[in-house]
Length: 273
Image (cartoon, helix red, strand yellow):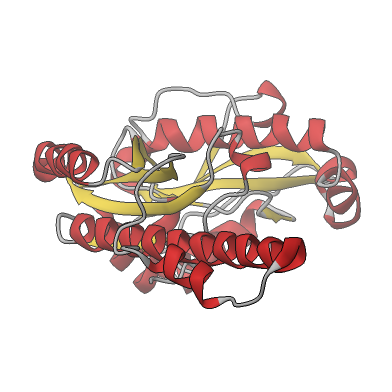
């Protein structure tokens, strides 16, 4: 392989917001897409790879101003949408390593150095992702579902609390409520684990993320499963079928299939469960 290309110096005060890394062979076929500040993305090539980035002013995206801006929810949402728009466009061309949000380098030479210094692991990760898509499955607990395995535990617990009078009756009811809640939570965790294990069998890799808080998810019901699955393209039909079958098997757990997504969950820094 020949030497890395010489990267011209960036204008003073300009940094690079990295969107993602793709094979250099597809970089020339990218459809023009707007990045940050609605300016066209740029590309640095080297070591058989290409880093796709937005040129950004360091007075807004440098270390200190970026730290302040990330606390501005309006600014953060706008930047995140622009970043995802580029990553999504890259994913449609083939394998992509999405960069974490707000990965900013001070100049293009640093991106070229990144491609050179991490060539082996970047190339291996792209090869692992080739021919696969990330799909998400969320499981929400529906109210009124029969707690699997609960049997007669709740009444037995109520009977076990002795005593008479209003105070004792309240304690019996309260303990029964707590026991029922615990039993329901255990049953929900069991169902979510079973669904994840079966779906993982239809995927090349699987991740189980922490359930999202309802304030974040915006869902009416609490989340018990937040799974991500790296599915071979030829196996997507079977994966969909498996999700539908599991939804019928566990009616108290509403399953929601989303995707395909760029493989955010399957790059370095994400742990598998």
